[in-house]
Image (cartoon, rainbow, N blue to C red; front, side):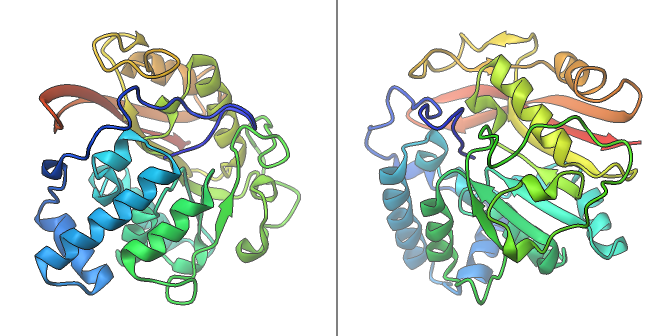
Length: 303
């Protein structure tokens, strides 16, 4: 959910990031509530609500993302994506199908995948700010021993952390690394079977989104079925989301489904070597006012 464009530039903050929290933003649905209860062991709804508000307050002090204010870290984003069954299938059918959740924030999506059967020993997570990962342990009342998924902090645009290389079309010569030994993502180049990236790309402008796509493509295994998938802000036509909320640094840049397909199939990967699916979904968020927004739900699968 969070990464910077370089060591000195942070993803833009929202203009109104310092506003008072709206208690109505805490509205987990039945499935999300059941997941929270099962993970935290807190079954009293009032106590659970208070617990989530405390973590939200602490997280907002780390960096005031809108998704923190709106409790998006409680949403089961990954499980509602069309590619999610394919992810679980990879985990069941392949002995070492490495799954990377990048921009993971509190790790709710990785936790959901593990709860649904993805082998925990094959999961790794990454975000710019390690404080969010620690707050994830606080939110879900876990420890590195009870939820032993490695977390690797770092900037996805930092070449020392994630070297930007062309996609692999043949298996890499280096063996897959021990996930628990990693201090950067570069050793994973060409070894990752699945990458989840939600609420991530839209933090950056068009050029940065292109570079980020290059970086993730270099991580992906050349094996057929390997997949990058996620969701983020989108528009019917590629461009700045001038209908939405102004952020510090300007409006959000959004791809359309058509431009997103063109980006991956032909620009990032050789044309015809991947299957790209992208759909624009209209959603309604309840914040200070009710307003419509659009999100791209997408996947890039190697053929």
